[in-house]
Length: 163
Image (cartoon, rainbow, N blue to C red; front, side):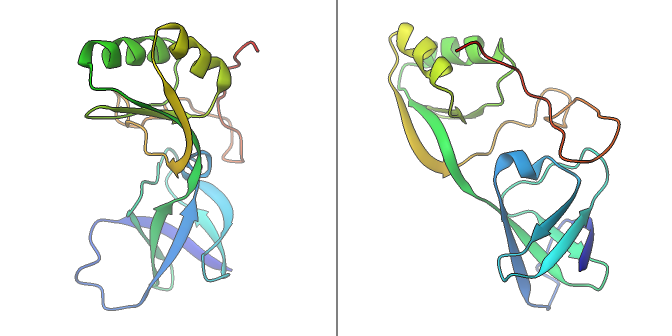
């Protein structure tokens, strides 16, 4: 099993062939886990606790191999909106529920949840459910996932929404 132990800044100076690792958001926030590279190679992530992987990040294995992270397409809810006040209002209501958000000009995206979709519909907004990569904001304190856990197994913090 390939052991991946660090995130590296730039691959321009690295001459080795680059493998890829495609993961959805929920797996890109886990520092220590077993994964399969896109070429089928079994690997283990042994990254610093709290490391969050983003699309195009590069990792290096103990043996020198470089692995490029790719954000997998997953089911997301996307709000396309040209009204900055309405977009800000949507961000406020979703942020108030501690929902990770991807925000860019005229676009707001979160992991699909029909209850949240209904809430935005109630504000007069139209939400599109689609398959896309999800790249949420890092968060005000830099980590994006500021909760710590007793161990690094696949435990992640989930806020329950009443359905």
